Image 1 (cartoon, one colour):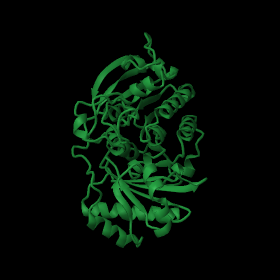
Image 2: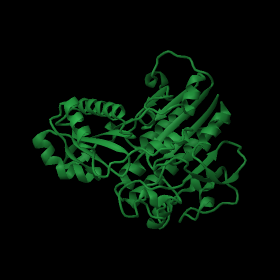
Image 3: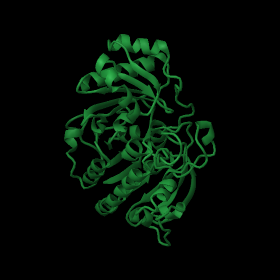
Image 4: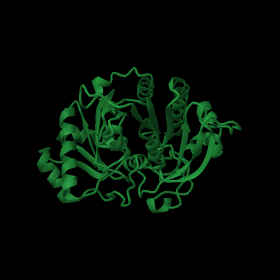
Length: 389
């Protein structure tokens, strides 16, 4: 059986794109390099073996004369620096037109329609904000009014936060589905609606990562659809299912942490996942090709957006520790691709994504190592997968 395994280390960019200023970023942004520097080096022996240190000078990541993989730098073709744009391009879909952002908050008529259709009574905030900061600031008012906290960022997102001890999780998801429909029908061109559930734990509003859900626009045809249409399996781990609005996916499982995502990826490679349990359609027979597609979000959500360079570094080291297990478990026909979708440099001003190039490491047992140099387009990955079909 031929398999491709794509692991996206969310936001692990490696240097500003030439047009970064058009996206509000500075040329100094380089998520991985700056995280390595902040931590006085990272311990990434598995990625170093593959050739990560040959791409750039990352403190603590040595160069190697005998890389075990192909390695290079990918430059995004699409106009954006968000999760959806990056993942869609990885899957072969170029976004020529950037998603809309709302730096002044969402239009009055949009919010009024949201209130009307959800019967939520009103909303709080409606401004660009850091999620952790806005729920701390407005938690008391949220409890007083029971109004959801609606906010955005420099990215194209409509985020809805509620305390699920006050507003049921199912209600939050229903409000997100209604918001997605309003945005689509109104032509607002918003990439994602994000459910941001939280609870007050020991007096502190705390987001519950495992219950987060993303409601993306539905992409047009990607390599995921090609695999599914040809009878193969597409196993989505983490928020991949949400990013693609289930399009082209046959099996899906959400995760609450990078550790869980890595362990599920390992189980999938070892054929130990209960696929029937996570299948969209039960009892189907599939052909002999599968794609395991994993998003590891902690680097972005817990550390990049919170300017926590130390935590970011520890998260990348955790990924590296699992790579030895993952590569050992791979079969001879398996192809592993490690990459990122954008940047989120925790060492520069701001808490938003950064418009960056990303690394790509391509490994299989017995692969001929190669310096891929600079590659135009994240869709390089989709084309690699197509060659296996």
